[in-house]
Image (cartoon, rainbow, N blue to C red; front, side, top):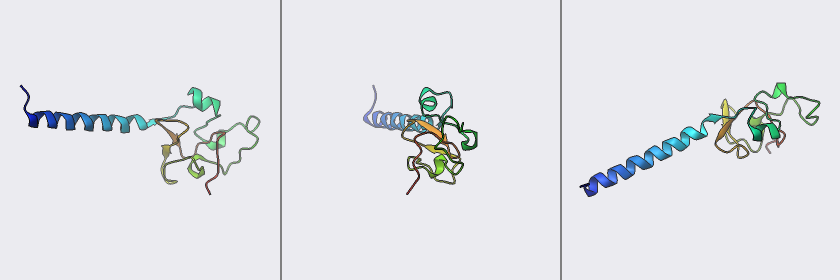
Length: 101
């Protein structure tokens, strides 16, 4: 028989484990071969973007200075709402790029 105290301790531990798992899932790095990444011409290195396929791209454009980027400009990677649960490279680029105001 589980005591009330044990029950609440177990509930607390399960909640902590679930929250930790969610943080771990968000840490996954986006692969250029991911279907969503391919659809948006994502490259982890903005200098490797195909200019013929993406004529509006410039070398100054990078995820770290995009409105959608949720990391700090000094971070190596950060979250992007277009790629839920994945981290994009700060020096990456995709066709949804929109310069920060």
